[in-house]
Length: 149
Ligand SMILES: CC(C)(COP(=O)(O)OP(=O)(O)OC[C@H]1O[C@@H](n2cnc3c(N)ncnc32)[C@H](O)[C@@H]1OP(=O)(O)O)[C@@H](O)C(=O)NCCC(=O)NCCS
View 1 (tube, rainbow, N blue to C red):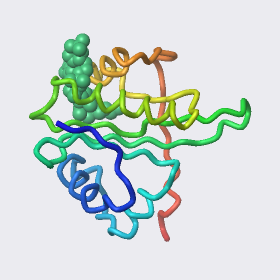
View 2: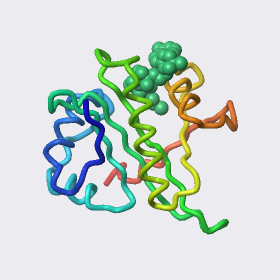
View 3: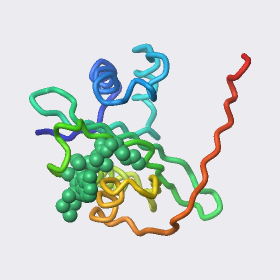
View 4: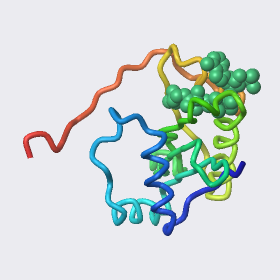
């Protein structure tokens, strides 16, 4: 088992991880390799995979931004998913620990993540990797900027 942060030329691996691990309902249209390469080349993007025999079984994405009100960099842990057949084997927590390592190297002061109130697996994975619960209610909104385009 290998956990690694993807680099610019790993676009094929990222494409196969998205195909294997992200539910069809959440995937939207298939991203081109050029688009994935651009995302992988962005220093503010963290894409981590867990590979077993070269096959992606875990995926994590996170994004860094400057919190200008206190001059620190923060990271939003946007997505984490482990293949259902490989859950409860420590893969989720290992990917989070790897993200923490990358963030410490990049002088990030805080990682921020949210999940639904009933997602026991995610809550446990965040707590045992050292996250502190700050709130228990949250409503999510989206601006669909491409609607009607
Ligand atoms: C959340 C998720 C990534 C965790 O990955 P994982 O590899 O199974 O996590 P780990 O094996 O590292 O387990 C972390 C902890 O959570 C616990 N855990 C895992 N699944 C659990 C469940 N269904 N209920 C309660 N605890 C659970 C584990 O036992 C472990 O705690 P422990 O060491 O005290 O036993 C995985 O369940 C998943 O892919 N879920 C679907 C996608 C999702 O909901 N992502 C989160 C969106 S915010």
